[in-house]
Figure (cartoon, rainbow, N blue to C red):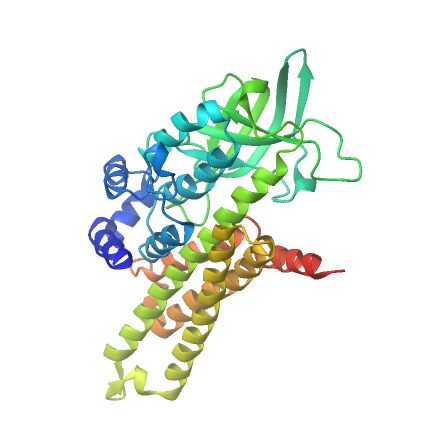
Length: 370
């Protein structure tokens, strides 16, 4: 029922004309759509009931994320529902958590996470931005790259080094919850392949923060960041499954109606086999994506490894399926006027987000090493 409701809603609210308009928009964010998402209760799904949320599981949210990927829904919904919600639910102080989570559920607070720097790494060794302690305050200087929806966020969780790592790269990382309007903090939108959802660069020039702005524990913020990245990665896998499913559906439908030599092209063995190969790749990846979402939801011991496995598999699958869907369409599939390139763009951007397939295969290999 949730899937049917989400698909029906998104089919009317996010047609391709709307998606294209948001691509050209300055922010890729439509306040009217955002209010409707709030009314649907989607932003409150993963928020506990005591904070005004629905108290639903991450698997429930997974269904909505998959349909959002199918519709190429633009804007910061995924960022707010995964990164922002996870960070505040686990990292905010108890005294502030209720207020913050209530704002998340009502759509008034969008949070995001800034981990990657110029190298594009999402591991603790890649965090080089320094936070120097000066008296009772910290001063942050440096840059963060590829931060999802930072231009719309009301709060930024910035990972910074507050102590030497020594032999443990995870130690010494602290998450600071910063107001985007903080003096010295500059946010720039990046031009990317998929402009339906924006990535940003943060430039921090002697940004001041105090201990009350720390999420989690000082020097031990990486487990909190890692959990948020696992949630966001699993959610992204579900989205990419939805994107690939829609591309496959478009290819199959076109193969039924496009005729060549007096018969539908779907009658030709080469096209049949291509569509079957796409379907097999999609179903295999779907199973692994849902396993990852289950593991993340239950905080299972294998969650980190399975999220990496899913990201590697789903990234390759989404690029393959959307590319092959273009091939099934032939010449028309390569045109700007046709919508398939929007799905391919989303798939390629999804592959790069939070580390590409090669990075996550390496993470799996490390997890399996004795």
